[in-house]
Length: 320
Image (cartoon, rainbow, N blue to C red):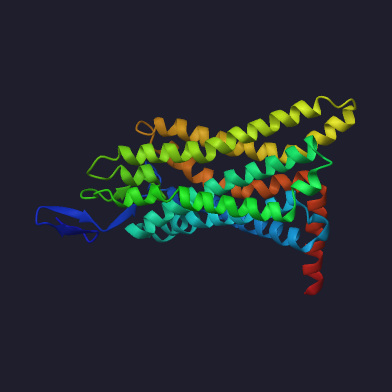
């Protein structure tokens, strides 16, 4: 029997016109209970990142490249969280599971783009710390406002263009049978697993994009911190070593969490056939926890940022 989500094609088989996002595999009956913690994480991600962005651009003391990159990261985090959370909450609260093919492919593109952007900004921040610690006298002439703008523009263009083949190839697949995706969002592998034709080219393309993008970013981040560690170990004062490493600690925490989560996500995906809930849940959490965690790490570990928060919040209270 033909469902509303398919249309007859060539009088012999069906062509899918929209997908159904089923939610979290194995816990459909009570997955709505997870909406509260996910909604709180989403509100935290939006409010904390918005506060960081406003604070950095209103507080003159924070007009530094490191904080400018952090403000750009906050925009990327809000974009990543907003790409997935409204639809997930709509599934849990209103049972709004259907999503058109163009919307689904657009979500695939946005997720890949924002995740790649986050990786790229982490690389820019690592380079900023490398120059500040290894070449402090040249720092003001290398890491300028112009550099921040050019580096950000490059990351936007790189990730905006490099990930285009992923949704384009997914859109070219033939979806002629099932349209139910065992997921809360449109993941490339989850969507293309429904295709009736060969999807190996999609998997290979995603692997190449990951290696060219995040793989190269991680390699250069590791190289930057290797140079930083080599330079720091040459310092004679323990206090100088502690101060130098202290400026990198927040960044290192976020990098370790971000890339460790990606590795865990890849590993759990291999076990997905036996335990389908695990990779789906990790995929959702990987796209919402970093946006909520990033501002908290910097807020707790950066005094200038905390003081800036206080000024902005007090100014807001006084204006009322």
